[in-house]
Length: 380
Ligand SMILES: Cc1ncc(C[n+]2csc(CCOP(=O)(O)OP(=O)(O)O)c2C)c(N)n1
Image (cartoon, rainbow, N blue to C red; front, top):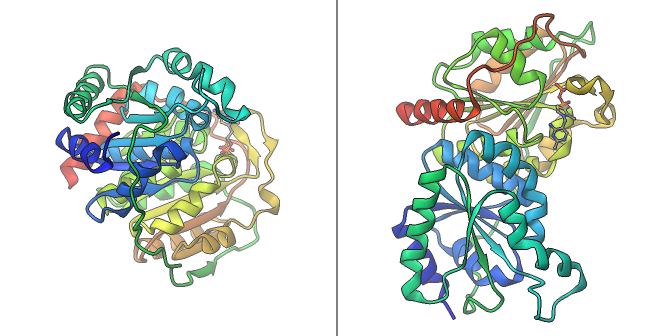
């Protein structure tokens, strides 16, 4: 059996320093140790897909990341692994457990995933290896994973068997609720602005050194069409992954980070708002462009009309929440948000529809990711 401390030491020697994930009982010793170690960063994500996006954000800040999850959670991570890590060529080390390993007694819900775990990883075109089984194999194992990720630019997975790790006590720092946040309503209740009008304001007001991560669909396309800058990342897929990616980046840099979200995307991974509220990245400015519809796929209604996003943000622990429904209201809220401690939600009610001449990013996603990482590292 391996000691979690030895695992973390070997991982650290290969440069891994940022951990996120969702627990599995097979992983308990490792998660306990990571979560108890005040010198390491562990982000307890609400879902495995969210964890993959958080890790991708930390990678943008130059960190080598580890995502720990149960193999059933691999199902939750398939979308960001295929439409974020693959096109953007963002690596992360996955430590995936092997619940339902054929031949071992386990619960019925793990049987199918236990049979297909390695096949699923292969289908995702990810390199994989069994988790190193001896202390002597740990160093070479992590070094091999690191080298493989350097070669491919893609995630690499270790598959961890039952009973691989010796017990560890859990000594997590207590998680205290943040002080209540404040709410500012700047709604004018007039005609709602177009998305492009808000993006134009944002382009004029965003600090020159702040990365901007734009959600999937027409938001990123409009941002690119209006202006393409090294500080932008157009998250062409991975719906709901923009906010957790910005969280990972903001936590890893401690600096101003702007995310442009959509109502459909925010609702798809609403748990990310709870994670943002809990981890309190002071520089995170979460702009939620709420047109009430899935504009990018034909305008089908989302359920946002009945959602008080500012209230959700505050109840999740955000420090500030602004609501507005005009471009002047947005400008005022944005200026105020820049002067406030985050995380801040800026909920902007806009009208559906987009620019007449709408382009698509012509810079390849993997180039956009490297361009932004260079920008972030140069600004650090
Ligand atoms: C996981 C996933 N499901 C569905 C889609 C298809 N899709 C692309 S954009 C989009 C709508 C996004 O809605 P919203 O976040 O409100 O932004 P809007 O299109 O209104 O700007 C959908 C459903 C996708 N890209 N990924």
